[in-house]
Image (cartoon, rainbow, N blue to C red):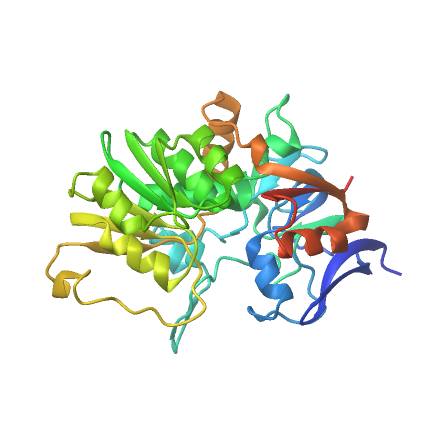
Length: 359
C-alpha cells in the first residue's frame, strides 16, 4: 500500500481542500522533495475560482522550499537531505523551447501550433507542492541548493514571485539612468520595483492605492508613488516626467486599464513589459500606439525557471542586495491551508503573501 501524505487538492470550482493522497513515485531523473515551506499564488486563486482550468484531484501549488527526500537513480550532483528549492517553472532542459533560450515555454509546442505556459507543470499539469511531498521532474535541471543560514521565508519568493517580477524588469531592458513606471504593487509588482532598482533605474514611479503596498514599494526602491484613486496615473506620470514619458512601463495587474495606461506613459521607443495575466481580449488604442509608428515595444514574460535562474535569485537574497522577507505578512500550517486560501483569495487583513509551514 502506498504511503499517504496531506495535500491541498482541487475538487471543483470554489473548493480546494486538504486531504490524503499517496506520496508520489519518482522516476530515474526525478527527485522527491519533502516540502518545508510553500505559499499561495494569485494563479492558485484563479484555479480556485474556476478561472483557470486544471484537472480535478490535482494537488495545487508551484512554489516549493524543502529537503531532498529521495533521488532518482540517474540524478547526479545532489544528495538526499540537502535543502533545495525548485522554480515554479520546471523546464526539461532539452526541448526546442529550452534550446532556444526560453525554458518557460518548455513543452508548449504541438503540431497544431503553440500554447503558452508549457513550462509551468507544478499544480497545472502535474501535482504541485501544497503538500508534504512533491515530485520534482528533471531534477538536475531544476533543483537549486539553499545556502546555510538563509531561512525558508527569505527564499520563499524565489521560485515564482521574485523571478517573475525581476523578469518583468529584465524583459523591459532597463538601463542605468532609466525612468520606470510600475503599475500595481502586489507581490509581483513589488518585485518588479526591486528588480528595476537593481538594474539601474534611477527614477521609479509606482501606481497603486493600498497605503501598505505603497509604503512597501518605497522599501523596494520606489522614488515616487501615485495613488490612482486620487489622480489619473497617466496625467500624474506625464507631469512627473515633464511630458517626456518613461523608458519602461511594467504592467503587473492584468487589466485593460493598466495595460492602456502603461502604453500611454511610454516615451517614443519605450518598452511596455507585460507581466499581468489577462482574462479577456486586449484592445490597443490607436493614439496610444501612434498608429503603429511610435517605435514602442510590447513584450510579455512568463516566470523563468530552472536551476540557473534559481541560483541567481538565491544569490540576490544571500548577498543582501534585496530583502523580500517583508512580503510574508501571514503564516499558516498546511493543516490550515483552507483558511489561508480564504484570507488570500479575499485579500483581507493587508495580506501580501502567506507562508505555509509544512514540516
